[in-house]
Length: 350
Length: 283
Ligand SMILES: Nc1ncnc2c1ncn2[C@@H]1O[C@H](COP(=O)(O)OP(=O)(O)OP(=O)(O)O)[C@@H](O)[C@H]1O
Ligand SMILES: [Mg+2]
Image 1: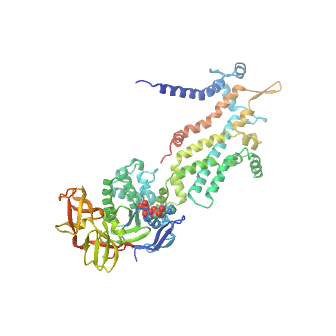
Image 2: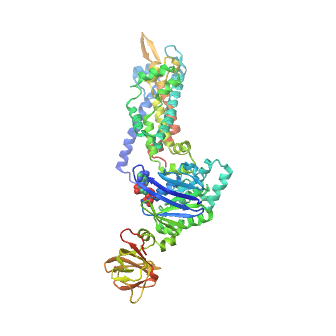
Image 3: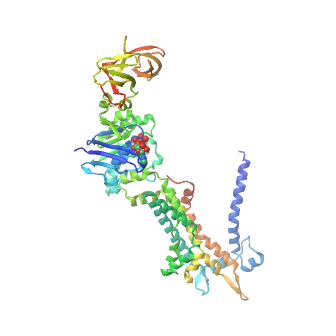
């Protein structure tokens, strides 16, 4: 039996919005699970049902072997970090951390010990006497984390906790969260709509679209083997290129080139997906790209251009390669790293 | 530095405002230090007289009323108790009812709120006979309970607390819940400390409201023991002169000055919070 089990969980809001459809998944003890998906896909709703902040319309949630559908949030022993941190504005940092422990009837000495430990771990010991309004965004973030850690809950829930931070701090906190989770070893669920965050943090990743889990797997699995066009387009940066085409008798025709021996029995209109990093320059390649724009990132160059009818086709090459605007490139796909999707429903067919 | 014309103007307006507020009080105080004859002959006095101790002594210690049983000091105490009771209960009750209205999404919460709000249109004076009937049926005439109880519900304060609670983000409640706080703890540990400026402000308003009640104590009390300051102002310190009750004006001024002290003290004590509560909500 898994640590956290979701069994056909459905959420319909009182106004009729169906936010989550019959979602099932298991999260193992100590695992770092990330929910990723576009805005409004139901990530927060799913998380809040696990926390007990929203009623479950249908289905079951088991945590550590206990059915928690009807268990009050205060008794579930879960901790949540909110997007805006939701620190207690009238309490100093020490009391922010201590409050949950006090409610559990833990002795004063134990509380002090635990708070000091957590504060040390998060490097907020100097701020214990300050009110949240006297802290910077990053420090508040740490306090919010500390409030979750100090209680040693069964599960951590994070709802986009990094989205209020600036880019640099975000990357730093991302790293710290990951390290911290590995150190503390608490099962965690992290919600984000940032795919880089998702890829870097997750042990396993659930890509959610319109209230449904489109794909569940390790980040690399999902990157290498997206099951649908949606997942393929969502995971990976810069985004995968999509070209229209026709598959007939294992031969794919698209935008002025042909690919033979496609491993698929599908016949009909398809979408061909190629990642910008899965191509390289050769003499007589498959794809002829006329360059419109070069973005130099330093380590890499992103080349945007046109192939036949497709604009803004992206190709990624090492930053050492000098490519000029207006030049023509000839590209090959490396190791048959391409994806074919059924045009009618977006499902992968190769 | 050059002083701007607009600054001078602003100061003039402000000074005029201060004078407007202070002069009547000063006039009352100055007049309370003269004897009644001077005031009756020459009108209110700007300068200080020499009767200060005598007048104030008399006000505090002389027994007045029809049966000559009640002193001004007793009336101050009565009014203070009444105002304190009204203000305390009003604040507690309205904070709690606003809590129920905002955080417990029970059926008809909105209609109930409007029902409470409508009672603003029905002040005590309008419902004074039914109120009197109920209080006297309960046997509460001539008691502090009777003085306080019919006045403790407050639509105004409920409204203000409700508006304030609505500005508190939901996440605060949610994370408190996850930290194991039940409804009661959330109220005590969060809403009360967060709204303490609001509580102070409401307390002052309600204290002054309770202190200046006139009609209700007048109807409620037959025993002089429960007379309040505002009632006493009309009744005591008269002198019979050829069959006509003449006011003893000097003592009355002294009485007025003394009667201002309790509310002023409340304001002074709570002022720090009170001003904050009016200007900004601490969040
Ligand atoms: N209280 C509510 N009542 C009705 N509908 C709601 C409520 N909360 C959310 N929804 C709807 O449910 C759907 C899922 O919302 P949810 O907040 O879970 O999205 P999300 O994936 O967290 O999005 P974001 O990344 O923007 O936070 C949305 O269509 C939203 O409009
Ligand atoms: Mg969300």
